[in-house]
Image 1 (cartoon, rainbow, N blue to C red):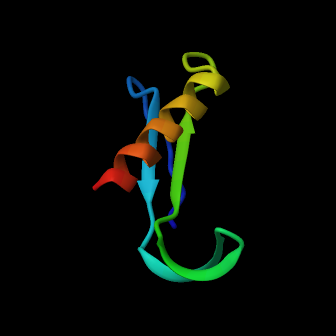
Image 2 (cartoon, rainbow, N blue to C red; image 1 turned 90 degrees about the vertical axis):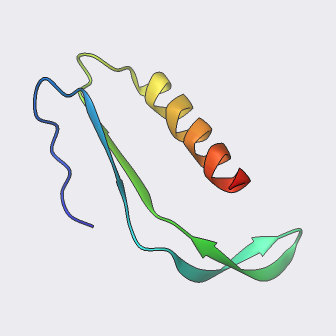
Length: 66
């Protein structure tokens, strides 16, 4: 994934990698799931770490519903 750079007046940027199958634990068993790597870069002077974590959690929940 390329380097994400926040350019003012932006305060954050999100990058998405390529979806690929990975073996993960699911209900105590190995399962193959499609994984989408996400990266969030943000300006700490404007956005707190907790806000960024809540945003990523909400984004993940929305993507899992799709």
